[in-house]
Image (cartoon, rainbow, N blue to C red):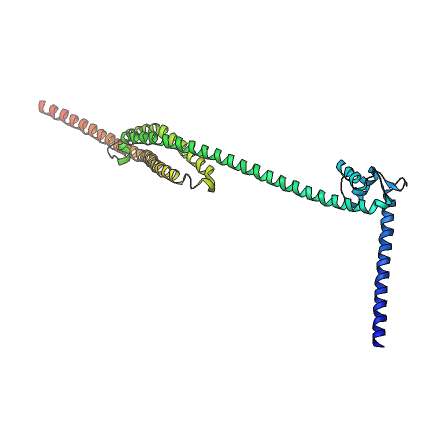
Length: 287
């Protein structure tokens, strides 16, 4: 009895599954027929190229190429597709959609690789251009610096009185020495500014990728330039101090001049008094 019940239940289950499959098949068949009729716009029970193209766009989001219709002729042996070949057409459209996506993906990958290659070439070109520019800048700066340093040495010799703070110079001499030094500083000062500008531009161009390549050369130039700039700053400071000192010396000279004038006036007064006294003494003697 138990076996009969189990068999009955199993047959009922199989029957339900079979009925379900038939129902699903009927539903799919109905949906497929409705889809075919939807795109068979002229009702001739065959899909033309234009109707197939509309089906591809509407249901598969694919723009068909001309070679797809050649595939239809090869696979189905027909130009237009009737309902009996519709399921096969849909399979071909699904495959075409996959191939279109694959082609698009390959095209995107190729485009990405192309861009990366172009960017790499551009980076290499920019690197080479920056390298050449840095080489020129550092070479020009290194070539100009010795001349500027030599000119500074000449100014230092000519302005030694300012640098040592010579105390015997008058205010006029101090101002004249400061002006002479200032004029003499123009050429080496301008040269040092040019060297500094070239070094700064070279350092800007170096970046992190070229820094190691020119690190030693740039560091050596920087040290030599900073030494020359320190010497130039020392001379500029001496010029400022000479002009400040000239003011103090001029004030002292003015005070001393006033004292001398006062002393001279006293001296004249004294001399005049002595002359008057001498004249009085001579008159009394004659009497």
